[in-house]
Length: 146
Image 1 (cartoon, helix red, strand yellow):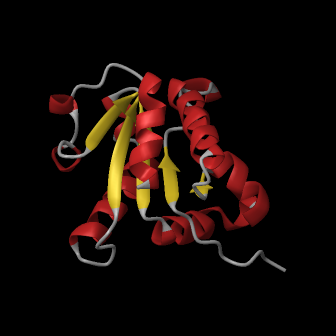
Image 2 (cartoon, one colour; image 1 turned 90 degrees about the vertical axis):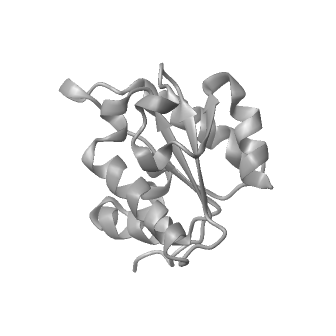
């Protein structure tokens, strides 16, 4: 029997692996964000952990349900290419559209920059969101907890 749907405070979106299947720097930073958020009591969807409980066969459905329930999206990226990757772009674009449409009136998105991103290099609809460097994870957690 599938696990009951969970409700999340935050959803971490990141590109897990790159060419050749190697982990991206984003995956390491996403893990650090997940550890910090969960230590602060924030119920966080992080696919490598949460899909163990939901089951790999329900991957897309589990991600959609978690994204639907989350109040915050934490976008972790080291470069524009990773932000534009199909799964990552679908997650942040869907989340932003839900906020703009009024479906998530209290929803917000923050960016964890684990590379050399500059606001001017971000897609237009991400430029207005707060960006934190990896060494500022505590500040990011503070914003999400508020």
